[in-house]
Image 1 (cartoon, rainbow, N blue to C red):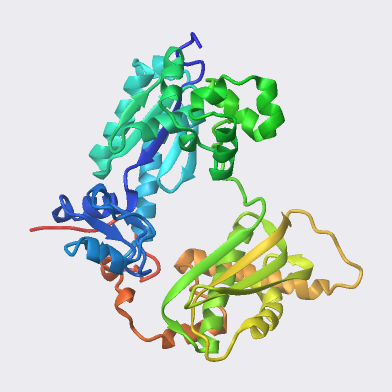
Image 2: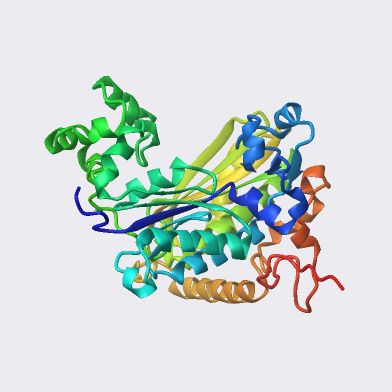
Length: 430
C-alpha cells in the first residue's frame, strides 16, 4: 500500500496494568518482582521483573514463591484499577472522541484527520498520548500505529513494555514477514494449525494467498482479517459500550472452600444479583438461567433451565434457582466457587403480553427492583440484597481475605467500604 495512513488507528495497551498501578501508588515497590491475586491464590498479573523469572498469570502462588522467595504478593484492588482505567481513557479522549474501550487496560483509537488540529504527525500524536498517560498516572503503555485495528494490535505487542511501533502502508509487508500466525489477532490455535497444514507460517504468507482462497477456507471472519492485515480497515472502532449479545456470566471464587449449603447458596445468589444488575443496565432480559458449582478438586456440577417468561429480576428467578441448586449440591462436598449464566437474551424495551400472566405482580416486581437499583446506585452495589446474603457474614477469616490498602482507608465523610470518592488514594504529608 502506497498511502501511509488511509486510516490512522492506534492500539494502546497498558504494561502489566494491575502491577503497574500498585507500583504507581507505592513507589517503594519499583524494582521488585510483584504479582497480584493474593485473594485468589492464583496470579492475576505479574510485572515484567517477575515475568523475567518465569512467573506468569495463572500460576498458583505457592509455585511462584518457590521460583522467587522474595516475590511481593498483593491482593487485587479492582476499584482502584477501574479509576486508573477511566482516567487513562479520559486522556485518550482529549485527542479523539473515537475511543473503543476494548478492555480495562487497552483501547483502539481512530485519530484519522487530527494532524491539522494538533499540528503534528500521527506518530507525534501517538507519542504525546503515551507520554501524558505515563506522566499523569505513573504507568507505562505500549502503543501501535497503523492503518487497521489488526495491524495496530500487532504493532503494540512488538516492543513491550513501554514500546512504540508505527507501520505506515509502505512498510506493512516488513511487519507481516516478522509476525508468526499465532501473533495475529483473531487467529486461535485451531486456525493456526489449519493454516500450517497449507505451509503458511507468517502473516505475510497468509495475505499473499488469494482472496477467493481465504474466503473459501476461513469464510467471512478470516476474510476480514485478511483485509485488515493488508491495510484495509474493515473493523471499525466501536465507541459505544455494546450490550452482551449471547450470555451474561458472573463467577466468584471464595476461600476457604465450604461445605455449608446455606453459605454456598448465598455466594451463588450474590452472583445472580450481580448478573441481573448487568442485564438491567443494558436493558435486556433472560429466558434461560444456568448455575455451576465448582468443587475443591476443580470439577464442576451444573444445570440450566428455561424461564416461562423473560425477566431481568432475580426475584422472579430465585425459586427456580433454588430448585436447580438443591439438585446439584452434594452434602459433605467442598465447594470453592459458584457461577451463574443468563442466556437467550432479548431487549427489555418492548413488552409482549401473555394472556395468563399476572401483570400486577410483574409491575410490582419491577417497582421493587427499580427501587433497589436506585438505592444501590446511591449507596453502593449490594447495599440492598436478598436475605441469603446474611449467611456471607458467617465466613471465617482467611489470610487471602487481606484487602487492598485503599479499602482500609476511609477518610471523607460519607465514604463506606462499598462506596468511596473516585480518587485512587490519599497521601498527605505535613
